[in-house]
Image (tube, rainbow, N blue to C red; front, side, top):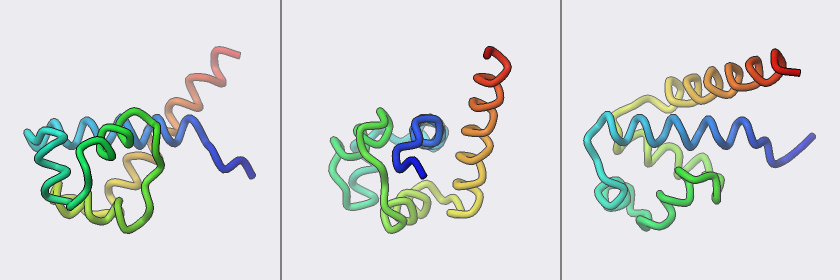
Length: 89
């Protein structure tokens, strides 16, 4: 099993950025609310880091989202991207 699923990482980054912006939060404010660094938030949004479950939970709490819904949105976004990629090939 491939440990570095690019489609999944890209979907996570995209959904995180969309949800943060929808909550009208800067990366700095989200970092403050989650007790993470602003650079770590940036790394997550640019696929340079993969979050732990604990980090995902902290981010979801700060964004007032359920972890289940957030992961579901990431999964759907990754599936859509994979489906589009398969259509092109």
